[in-house]
Image 1 (cartoon, rainbow, N blue to C red):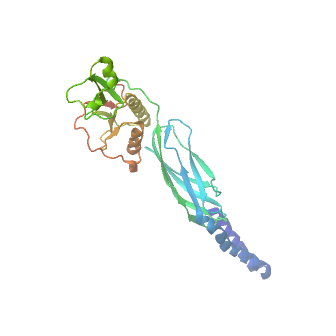
Image 2: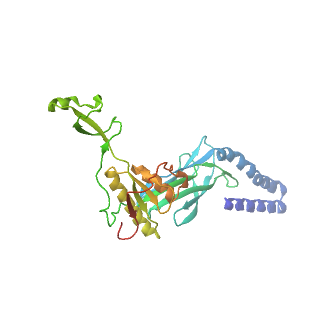
Image 3: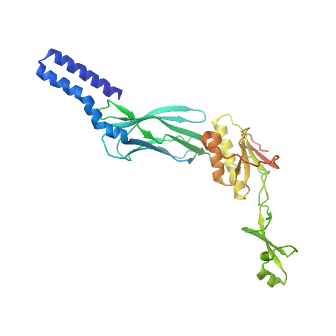
Length: 314
């Protein structure tokens, strides 16, 4: 846009010089024509500049070294002529920050793709700043609406820690207090005080004895996965890879756990993969996604597994 303005100023200056040196009836019309370019450009482009918008489409979670792009999509409510849309994309990671200038086409649903760097794990923040619609002749610009901020979590492949013997496996179940529905259950002999509705009549008839269908549930847990800090990108990939492996392992055995990064005061419970993803978004960069604080955190953890970059985990 600066180049267009310089060209216009130069054209205006030459027209004025031409007006001063040559017959007025020719140079006058040329000077007026150049001066009229300003209101004409504004009148033709203003409706389009006021209705243009820019949306950012970005994946939430990516695998390390996966090919992925961020898409900038042009939108508008009505079709009016505009030269282009220009934005500054600010990209911030754990240990870097860069800003790049991007020009987008003005047509509706036109897409501009930006490659996402997935060479290392972590959360990368993408922020659209100073989005402007440029007039047809490039003499004016106006800010436009935009879906301005997005986060991408890049995860390394699961890496098995050096010492996994301390990890629990299997699901220990206990009778569900108060009874009720449960996917897991056990059969036992009827005892005085058992509700009649819990009697399994078909099995009782087979064994000629009253048999109870007793619902089971896992006991409350106090397992903690403690993630230690890293000092480099390589250590971060290693630690997050080990964390992913441990999480997959415990969830496979239906063993929820608490997780904490170093001395971070927010401790979250992971009962499914999405819980881990949400917590990683928070601790690695997206503070707006802070998980809800747990109302009841065990005062003591009966089982702690530490994840760091060393060769041995305890």
